[in-house]
Length: 258
Image (cartoon, rainbow, N blue to C red):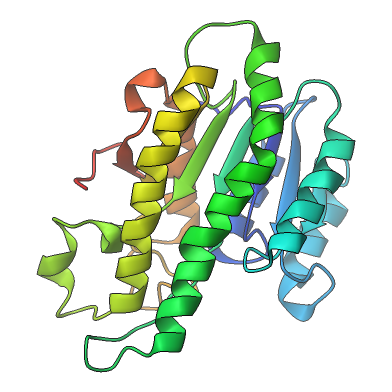
């Protein structure tokens, strides 16, 4: 089983759902030098209580950072704060997990839903990659090893088949989530183009579909539990090489068509 051995990890949307489960599983199996920066919009709010409890169990392994993906100044401030805590070896793994969903069709989708999903699911990750890129570059150089891996320097974008041009049409009538699907398609393109830019620095970048999971976003009808999805995603993340750079995989390691 592949293991995530990245020393410094940052996860967005870490106070609930998949983000919280990722922090939980990483902290329970953390290495001595591993540290997780768990970000969320409101660290002190009621929706972050579970994350705060997790920090109490693993105080040396987790630091909560305020980061609102919709607020460019918040993204910038979070990067400054994390940068002051990283040390000389940079950030090894950035997991863009924060996201929102909005349902709708051509006839029912509102302008507000389209703007909100695009802001959170596309512009937010773009700004996060931009602000944290210097720390990823430091990690890539500090590794002293050729090639790409999640333990060296990587950006993992938690995406969805809802953003797949080939997969979404067949499930659209069952899941009419036009604003979400359009934003995730944009997120997928961001992944592809970011991978192109980051290639020269040997920073791995790819998209990962977690499956249909029982979370606040996925709903109760979803067949997958968060634990199973995250176990699979962490196995995939731990096994990544330059061969998967710019790719789109699901939590089992299977390729997802764009």
